[in-house]
Amino acid sequence: MVIHFTRGSSQESGTGTILDCLLISSPPLHNTSYILCPRCGDQTRTDGVIRSCLDCFLSGDDLYLFEYGVSPALFLAKARGGTCTTASSDPTEEVLYRSLFLLENGFGGYHVFKNNCEDFAIYCKTGLLVVTNIGVGRSGQAASFLAVAGAVASSPLRFVTTGFGGLALVGCGMYCISRYISDIGVRSDVTKVPVEMITELGKED
Image (tube, rainbow, N blue to C red; front, top):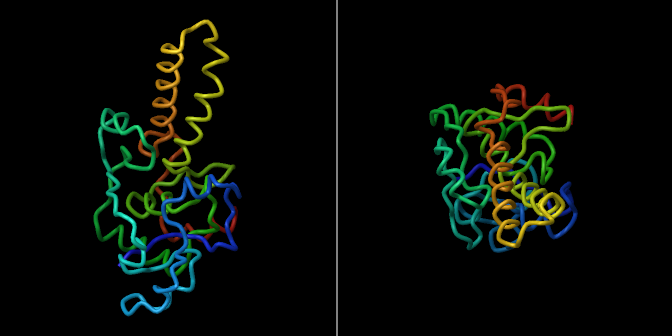
């Protein structure tokens, strides 16, 4: 069984554009053949923290392994965001406790940039959250998108005299640095948050 955080098609609070589809790795289930699954039951509720069997969760897609506790070198070598973090996973018992608690109590409102399925999974595994006055969480997928946007926007302006190869190199370097400093394992504004406090944080957002 998989405990995961998703959003209903009528309750999305992301970008409201095609970016939602590109950035979300745990979309709502729309396949009606899974509504009365014999293993996980009625899957008509597709918002918030839910529990599904692996088949319903994947809906025919592939399963990818997210890695925890990777070295900075390996993190930078994985160019695509949302695949790993330098933060280490907690013991299985703690991960399960957080997941089951949030299944009963929720994880706040879904937001593609501030509180999405990757934020949920990383929190369950590590207990770490980015808690600032602008929201909770910042997933690797969202951080990568913003890193790309920043690299594209600033490189041509700063290096107008550089050739195409130089621009590409600088843009790649800015992208990698932006991804790394946004990783929850190295950020300075990250704190270990007890799962019992998550409901209160969600009410403040």
